[in-house]
Image (cartoon, rainbow, N blue to C red; front, side, top):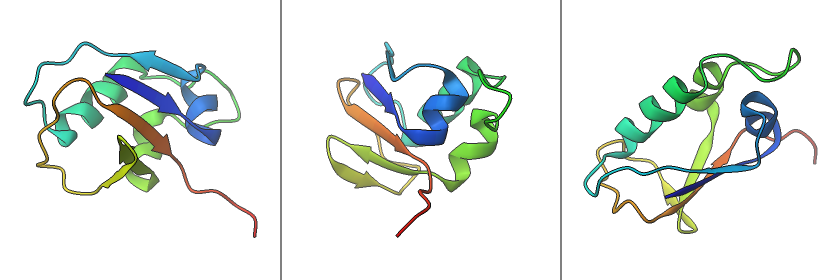
Length: 88
């Protein structure tokens, strides 16, 4: 599974993307817990911790919106972590 981070999420974790080896059947909720535990502190003084940011983020799994925390993942998804964006 590849997780890509955008904007404030990228600033929080300090990388554009990372590869995770999670078993098939891992739920979306379990993925969120894993991401927060991998990055307990912010990589930037100006960015929030990932655990604080995740509840406000939108997520895409293979370009499809992920909303239900009970959704089971196959383990080979491309996950995009999209924090709220400002502007217009």
